[in-house]
Image 1 (cartoon, rainbow, N blue to C red):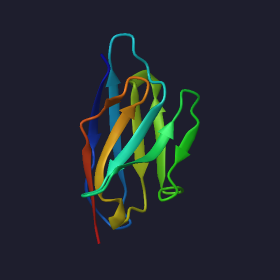
Image 2: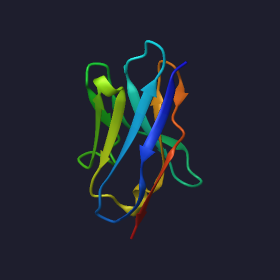
Image 3: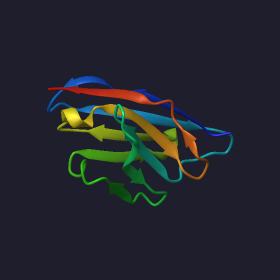
Image 4: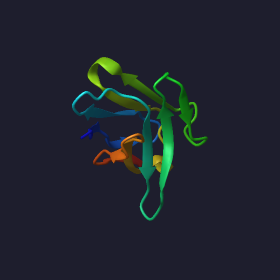
Length: 113
C-alpha cells in the first residue's frame, strides 16, 4: 500500500516563495511518475506539474517559469518549489502517484495580495 504524506505550504505574500514536499512510502515502493495538482475553492482539481521516472517534467502554462518539480529518489520525496507566487496560486495542493492512484492529504497554499 503506497502512502503519500505532504508537508510545507502556508501563507505567503505576492511574489514570495514556498516549497511543498510529498514523501512516498510503501513496501518496495520507489518513486516512478508523480504529479502535483491543485484545487482552488469552488474549482476543479487541475494538474500543476508532473515528473516522470526519467526525470522529464511537464508544467501547466500558468506556472511555467515559476514552479519547479523535483525528486529525491533516496528519500522517496517529490518537491514543488513555487516562486513568484500570485494570489491566483491560492489552492489546496495535492501530490498524486498515478500508477497507484494514491493522493496526498492536501496542503493549503495561500498567497495574499
